[in-house]
Image (cartoon, rainbow, N blue to C red; front, side, top):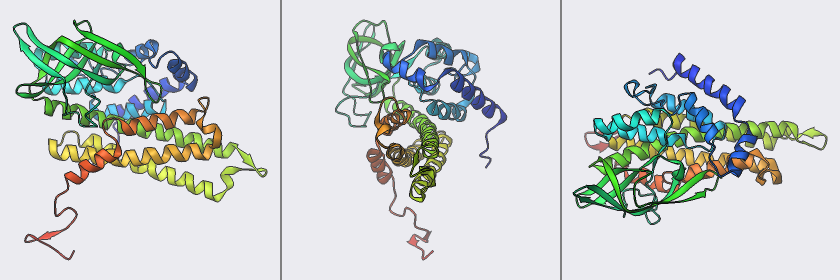
Amino acid sequence: MDFDFTDEQRQLRDAVQRWAERSHPFERRRATLAAGGFDAATWAELTALGLPGLTVPEAHGGMALGMVAAMVVHEVLGAALLPEPLAQVHIASAVLQRHAAPALQAAWLPRLATGELVALAHVERHARHRPEAATTTARATAEGWRLQGTKHAVPAGDRAAAWLVPARTPAGLALFLVERGAPGVSLTPHTTLDGSRAAELALQDTPATLVADDGAAALAWAVDIGIALACAEGVGVMERALALTVQYLNTRRQFGVPIASFQALRHRAADMKLQLELARGMSWYATLRLEAPPAPRRQALARAKVQLGQAMRFVGQQAVQLHGGIGVTDEAEISHCLRRLTQLELTFGDTLHHLGEVAARMTDDAGVAMEGGQPSPA
């Protein structure tokens, strides 16, 4: 199997990297966070690059480059500490392509490609990383579906044109699309741990369009896409954290020499690099397994999230400790890396949750070579 990137993917990575270095320095991130965690000008620049339409089919105005290209882009934007939720557009694109009726795809995929934000609104307070445990309800009326309930921590929810909302019907869980101007929509914006923007979405007898009758399958697909993109972004943030730490170790002097000359600190930096590369491999694994059948796909994504969660926590904490006290100040870029890594570790289920997922999917003979139904000595 060829694990190398194509020329097209490398060119895409280089183009996005040039934009990030030129147009999104750390000072711009701080200004965005100070203004509420979302910058419309940055979003317009991402749209001009074609990034919202990266995975949208060409027939609907997109670039149709697939999830590997999305992974490449999110690594670069992770390293740029971008607070805008581009991943939400790619999640919505994937869900609509796989589960929505052709008419709904024709109505919304071109809008995604031109930069309209559709956010996944699946978090409820009691669910504890179990999005299928939704208590939001949907009822059928003569005019269509109506939704009742509240969703929390919707990424840039008050800036979205629509939301993908799982809700419970008499037949089970279904997935709906709710438009911003629908009656009964109430939004309460807030900022998150890392300073990016989110909102609480309250629905009061709100009209909605059915996306998928099998909401559990559609939601699982959305969450797995989100995990893969969060893993890719985490790799980018860890790359940035390691680069900043190495730069600091080579600059900071103690006893008349750079502290990078101290063997104990060099070993800690080497351990950070090791965790980064382990995480990178699992991030690629997660993206490549997205097209697997649901059960092995879910297992692969849970494994990746466990490895990434452990790596993000280790790299972020080591980076701050090696910076010393300055590493926890808002002025220090490394503190933003730690906050972003911490939030990514909690996104779409924390490490402990996914460790449980991995354990639940292990078979009795996991890791044991079998001969004739019995464990072999090999």
